[in-house]
Amino acid sequence: MLTHMRAAVTEVPLSAPSPQPSGRSVGTLTRSDPPWIEFYDEAELDGLTSIVWLRLGEPDRAEYHLHRTLGALHSDRVRNRAYYVAHLSLAQARQGDLALACSTGDQAAELLAKVRGSKRTTDTLANVRKLVVSSGSRELGALNCTERAQAWI
Image 1 (cartoon, rainbow, N blue to C red):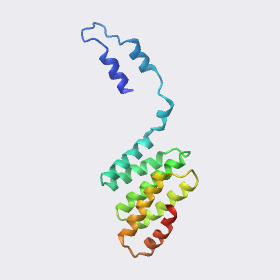
Image 2 (cartoon, rainbow, N blue to C red; image 1 turned 90 degrees about the vertical axis):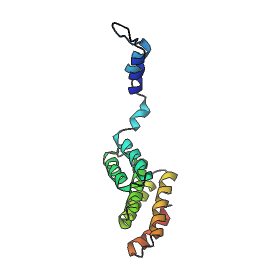
Image 3 (cartoon, rainbow, N blue to C red; image 1 turned 180 degrees about the horizontal axis):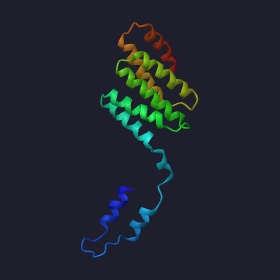
Image 4 (cartoon, rainbow, N blue to C red; image 1 turned 90 degrees about the horizontal axis):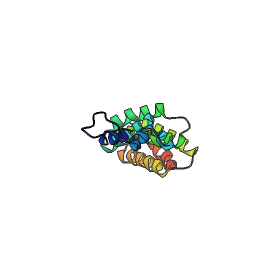
């Protein structure tokens, strides 16, 4: 919408006494958004923001946005929920909270079992498992997690 508004502004001559955008610009401004744009709601924007924070090495910031995403995500988007829960698990693991990361990873795997699989989600869960294994933790929870996590991937 902002791009269309900017395009309309550029079509107005600077010297025009009464600025009137062209019919093409007005038509563009009044046209409704395409149906696919509804997918990108606040939940999805927070989810995408969380992935950026994860890639920048800021798992605490990512976790904040993931909680916002999961709180706002439509209930019918089970595959997306599994994807973002897997990323929440990864953020928790990167913060060193392995037990919580494992529990969250289990939740992601349960959600993923309800829908058609997702390589992106299973790859994320595989990264969680790698972090748990590479931590060298001898805690019973972490050891059990590595066994359960094998089923995630």
